[in-house]
Amino acid sequence: MGESPAIQTENLTKIYAGSGRLTHFAAFRKIPGGLIAPPRPPVHALEGLDLRVERGEIFGFLGPNGAGKTTMIRLLLDLIRPTRGKAAVLGLDAQRDAVALHRRVGFLPSELSLWRNQRADRILRYVASVRGDVPTLLAEANRLAERLALDTTRKVRTYSSGNRRKLGLVIAMMHKPELLILDEPSSGLDPLMQQTFYQLLREARAEGRTVFLSSHILSEVQTICDRVGILRDGILRAVESVEALTHVEFRRIRIRAREEIPAGCLENVAGVSEVRLQGRTAELQLHGDFDPLLRALSNFYIEDVRQHDPSLEEIFLAYYGDGSAVEQ
Amino acid sequence: MIGAIFRGCLQGNARATVYWTLAISFFGFYAVAIAPDYEGVRQYATLLESFGPISTLLGVSAEVLSSSSGFVTFIYLDYSFLYYSFFAVIAAISISAGEEEHGILDWQLSLPVPRIRFLWERTFAFLVIFAIVSFVSGAVTWFSSFLNANVSLDFWTILSASLNFLPTLMLVFAVTLWISVVVRRRNAAIMLAGFFVVASYFLNGLGDLVGGDAGAFLRGISYFHHYQRGSVLIDGLNPANMLSIAAVAALCLALASLAFQRRDIGI
Ligand SMILES: Nc1ncnc2c1ncn2[C@@H]1O[C@H](COP(=O)(O)OP(=O)(O)OP(=O)(O)O)[C@@H](O)[C@H]1O
Ligand SMILES: [Mg+2]
Image (cartoon, rainbow over all chains, first blue to last red; front, side, top):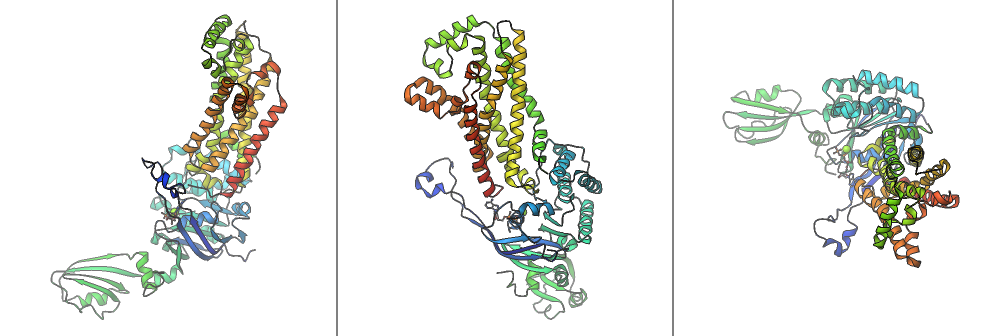
């Protein structure tokens, strides 16, 4: 069992049923006032996902809104059931062995709601008593709360959204789970707390535990993850180590000169590609050092140089050359 | 750990328990202490009955109202029970569709507890809460009978009346649970379960009004009829009746569990 991967999915597919079974009947469609909504087609939220996450790594699950990240996480936790395929977590079947699995997994939902009128420490005590060993669990919870600077004697209702998130983290981590499943964990945390949080994750990894987190922030994933999976439109586009990705790092540059930049003058400059000229402005991609580009432009009066970090898509386009991996 | 969800549910609803005990006790107190003039009540009831249908519809009859225990039956056990039914509806919604809609179920069901046990421990917690509310309200009613020389209530009678509440409350609870597990939406579930309660209430009265076989049928499909309001004060508990109501409640709970076990959580 020690050798089984932290997460392994096979052809994992989730199709949410569309709405509007009633609207198949013409008679219902005539009901005025929008009482019966028009039918929604089924949503293919996840398509044939094959993923393997090893033990002891921090795995980032990256994708834009609606990519299917939350769907994947809810499947792993048996909150929803797959249309096809299966998932094994820590060597256990996610559906059949859900209870045994939940003992060893910690979960932070992306939108955490708690009982608003309860004090945080009451909620922690409740979770501890459901999980079992109350004194040990509460001791760890208090330790975590202290590190996250969370006052647990207040009611949830009085918490800011960041504090609520911290409470969710404490709930997810208090039993030192072998696998942490975190859905957009750092959203709402200020930069200082983010650092503390990253530190907690690294400590978990040092203890041989596994972290699976979803995010749509590239920089976050780059900071803490060992590997990244890219999900878009329910399809896993790529899985790469962060190291390999940062290796292809490049910048997108936008230059504005006082006079027109002639075509061809930026061709064959080392590290420059994808040049687009438009009168006095040039947009390009730059790999490696700045120097060759600056030398090539030394004859021009440069008014402005802007650099922006490439989007994830751009990095992956670059990484996979013609983008075949990205465009299916 | 077994029992943790049960205890959590009891603690989380401590305040609600107090409020509902106060509300239900008020009916008993009101019935016993505030309306003592049975001669006046009888005249009023006779007057109502001269209108025929309306009085029958509400289940009022001069005969029932003109004895102290009949009066208590009518006010406390009948009226409070309608309110009480809504308590059961709210309770069942709060632990299922309510929490689901608020996203609380998401992290609760990521705890190492089978879904069915989750539902059952909370159902059991509410059985205990209903028992507490019933017995305390019954005790308040009994104590208030000392305030009024016209009323004589036997302690055991009021105790059995409180016991008689429980199976039917669990039935309303289980039906609501089933509805809310199936329809998921909190408001829709409240609407349907509320309809179930109110329709049952009126069907029972309507059955009295219509009479004959049709009336018996109408009463037969209303849980208010099977609850046997008041007859418990006259004839005592009817264990067979209580057990069969409890059995139907258990069946609804089983159906709710089955639906809950199978489906996706979340909206
Ligand atoms: N219960 C549902 N019924 C129908 N469609 C759903 C349901 N839940 C999610 N979807 C759809 O499935 C797709 C994937 O949603 P999901 O929540 O998994 O995305 P996500 O990657 O977590 O996005 P985000 O970054 O916004 O959280 C979306 O198109 C969404 O609209
Ligand atoms: Mg999401």
